[in-house]
View 1: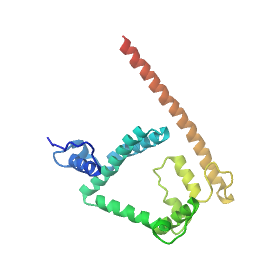
View 2: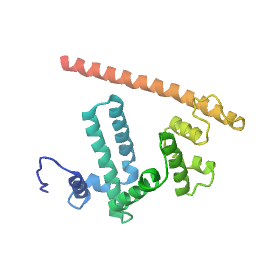
View 3: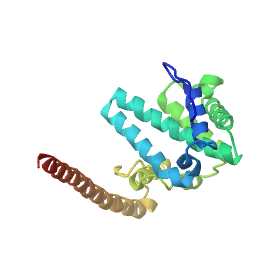
View 4: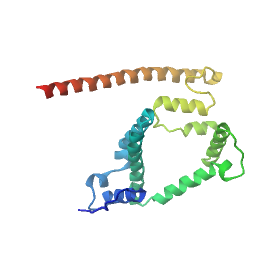
Length: 215
């Protein structure tokens, strides 16, 4: 049995320590067996649950779900630490350097007085940082793991075509955009039907459970 210190408030160091204990010999067999692939769905589910807390504007739920999300991030970093490929400090070093580089209006002499100017600079710096020589390169870099409509909107935005809801697109891309819009509409209808089916399932399950409880 491992005796973890009893505190009135636990901090980030405690979270890092307890996750390392769980993955160490003598810790939790399940935690030790996890890989990025096996944990991928858990990671995404926690992100969506945090997003639902944002949608509800529920601070208590946000606190809980952001904690779960933070745990997932650190858990996956520790998988890499155990593999000897990078450390927590490597991750923080990378993101701090990125934030400094992409905010030259804060940490340098570049002028950016508006949000629009900041975003233009951000995209230009991002392309330079990632060696993207063309717009096609930036399109190819959009994550294929995104939900399809989300990915489609991001592709169109980066191509300068607005989004799936935009009316005007370059003539040479019109057929491709039309195909994306048709597929998005079909997907939307399917998703709405599945959402209704999920809600119906919950309602029926609750009714059956409550019926048994009354017997």
